[in-house]
Image (cartoon, rainbow, N blue to C red; front, side):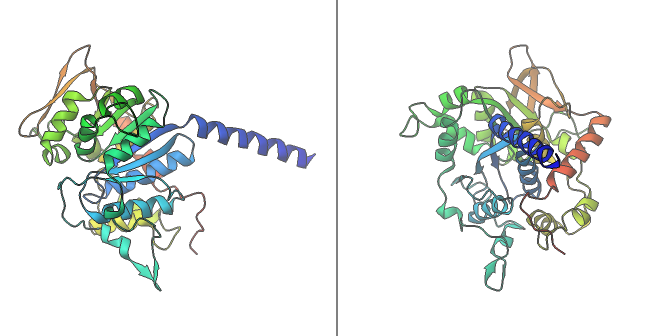
Amino acid sequence: MKRSVFFIFLMLNCSAITFGQSSATPLIFDTDIGNDCDDVLAMGVIHALQSRGHCRLIAVTITKDHDQCAALTDAINTFYGRGDIPIGVCRSGVTPQQSRFTGMVTDQDNGRDRYPHNLRSGKDAPDAVAVLRKALAAEADGSVVIAQVGFSNNLANLLKSPSDDISPLSGLELAQQKVKLLSVMAGAFTAINGTEHLEYNVVEDIASAKILAAEWPTQIVYSGFEIGLAVPYPATSIEQDYNYVLHHPLKVAYLLYEPPPHNRPTWDLTSVLYAVLPERGFFGLSGPGIVTVDDRGATTHVATDTGLHRYLTLTNDQQIRVTEALVQLSSEPPRSVVPHK
């Protein structure tokens, strides 16, 4: 009898897992990993959400032009048991400087990679636009969600791309046909301490941010600077929740970025959380409108019923809920990890 109950339980769980994987949202993560540690924590959130069956990471494209970014991305994906995820890079010249933490990817123990990875350098990675086109072309119409948490250069270049052997559609047509939602960490829609804020992801590549706002053909939801600022990641979680392995890439990146203790804003994590779970009530939304980017990099949202652009809002209660969700997700161990003793 006990064995029969066990097999029923096993079959039900296998069915649930299969259903979760087949219904998971295909997700593209477009990131400037290396410029801040929140990109790394956002990857932890993505992998936890994939393990729970909510999303399926189909590609990572990088908007910071430095060769170590691709290698570290591959190392993080490999840590979570998904080292086969396609990675594409830009060659834009945007923020080419050395990161505070991507050098960790070269760390070794007894001649072996501390953080195993196959992609050794961005020089060996394909162009981001080709990876985006291939990822989009392979998915069902209206199914793909993109979380862009860096600069807009990759997506702006996608819009300019012509038909090719990957797809007879132009990049604009692929985006219009395949993308359900673009969740963007960019801009600022509330004054910070009474002062206008010119947000980094926009200011570093204003031309691309303008193209994205003016030409992207589907719904865009912006997570403004004020959202991540209102949800600082607690230093106690970094200190206590990642110790199940001796060298955790997320914890190490966080500590290398800035010596502890510090509560780093969760800018990129909020954009990912909304992208994958938009109906869970973690955030509020502005009304529809149109976002414009001026020559200084300032973002303005003008309300209009026909606009495709909204931005996230956050109540005090949501701030508490989002903080807890991000801590639990980003620190969730990979399914295959062997705990450190």
